[in-house]
Amino acid sequence: MSAPEFIVLNGSIIPYEEATTHVMSPAVKYGLSVFEGLRAYWSDEREDLFVFRLQDHTDRLLQSMKLLRFAHDFDGAEINRVTIELLRRNRVKAAAHIRTTAYLDGKGEQQVKGPVSYSISAIEKPRAARTDKGIRCQVSSWMRMADNVMPPRIKCGGNYVNGRLARYQAIQDGYDEAIILNTLGKVAEGPGTCIFLVRRGELITPDLASGILESITRDTALRLARARGIAVAERMVDRTELYAADEVFMVGSAAELVPVVDIDGITIGSGSPGPVTKLLQEAYFAAVTGAIDVPADWLTPVYKSER
Ligand SMILES: Cc1ncc(COP(=O)(O)O)c(C=O)c1O
Image 1: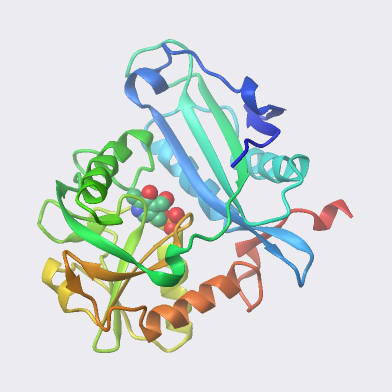
Image 2: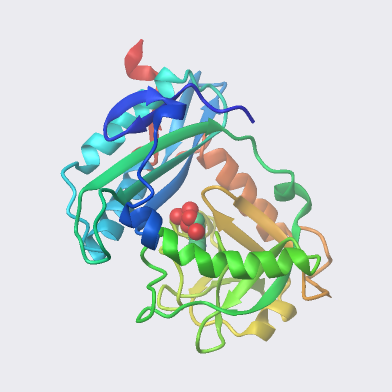
């Protein structure tokens, strides 16, 4: 995919190739960055692009910076405004992925609070084929780091070292993706997704204290399920519950809602995406373009106010 024309650096829209930082920044030296990955969706019916749950992503970015003690001089309103401006400048009119990164710039050491810079990129990114056919997963031998080690609740660059180790191993071993257990040996999440299972008609997902990111797509899936009368439980999940499940799927802003059809060589349910997975997938794909009623603040129109 070719690079977009423009990118945001510290509130300014500049040519993509000009967004650089110094190799001695704490971001490069120590991985001191926080980020968000979100999507925007084009609606033919409404002839507009919608950023999905923009405010929730911005709030989480602010929370990540707060927990890492970043002292920033920009606010959430600026992030929201410039995200929309960037999508307009790049004339994005198709499914897109947006990445917002705030990082410790300058040349300081681990304990500095600033200066904090931020970038926002937006590239067109169509839906992956794996959302149709599903994926095969490996329960990783790598453990999810605990809240008192490197809190998974903070969406920081450094945490993705754990995800990389697990994903790399899974792919090398012939799987598509990893499922990571927490330090108690209970199911946590994937390297970039949360996980759900369906068993005896109930939709189950690890609770927020299981060593997971406070995922926005997890919240969306839970709300869509409850609205459709599906019983849901947020609780600790055993590894063997995954193998015994009728259906398993993973969720994330980038991944969307991906069926899991095999774990460690054990076929999940019938081996193809199950009815609850399909129902929620359909609901999710409709929600993100406003084809069904969703809370007004879930969809931020990009071009409407331009007309
Ligand atoms: C580790 C991890 N878990 C879960 C998720 C899903 O979170 P969200 O639905 O907010 O994108 C992500 C993606 O950002 C992630 O990186």
